[in-house]
Length: 392
Image (cartoon, rainbow, N blue to C red; front, side):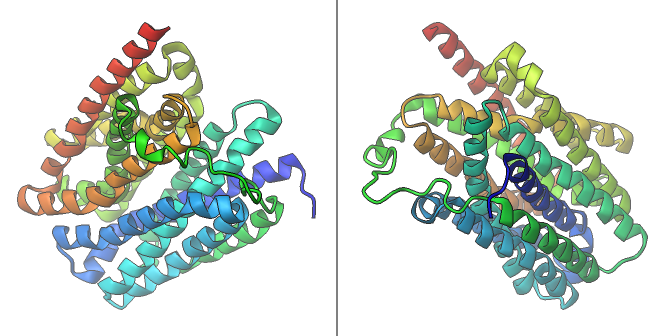
């Protein structure tokens, strides 16, 4: 079957949407899952380690697998993992089995981490064909999925729908989307032909000695930690730290997701006006102010409004920083892969770190860690912008 470029674009948008839908469906039910598991904050941090570890496995294996087999097989396996993860998490929560929830989160992390790289390979190929930006729209599709999933989660909580049935329903919807979308992707985008030498393979180790790339990776790390902290902990922060009930805690997360979506769809003019490095610096400052207000201001209205700043600040961080990494020197694909790996350290270390610190000082105080990293990211991004201007 030969698909049109419009069908291919629609398929990729749908798959990004599916990843966001699944993520926010799990996030909105974290307070209920925590209660079903009877887990402390620190124990929830260890449960979330399944998601982080799975993400690392997915992101590290996806590139080599794409080169060997092409993007579509990697996208297929990854999305099967995403779809299967939802009922696994739901059944684990209903059974009070932390191990089964961890397994479900590992499936989701590995599936989404692996599929994300491969889908970006597809998206970059589409950009070359249509000769205009497409990747920002794809990441906007992910954010739109998080909004829809968060709203659906709020409705499920308000209706008293058990976690298990909610997540099984999400898995069923995801299966339908996946089965439609995967038919419209070409079979071998990104696959190396026999005898081809992977770009950057010979000097990959030398990239670790490139100071500009490492600084860019630090910005990726800071922005990923800020985004991941909200995805992992924001409903619990609002429930445990600000006294909201679970439904309202999920509403606040939906506001964060909507702010991320708005920032990604509307961020193009900001980047064009300021440049990527300065846009990153401004985003980091904006996000840092939002996180700080959620952490230190003991007022639920102020904290809920500050989530908008947090979401807008985090919106452009990961994709723009990766783009900056790709332009930091030769072999852009290898540079983006390395910066992605550095960024995913935030998803690996962040959840258990914030959980353990939150056990000692409270989740609100633990948010000072991503806030501090955002300020570091703002300074580093500013320096990167000045060095770029100086070379120009």
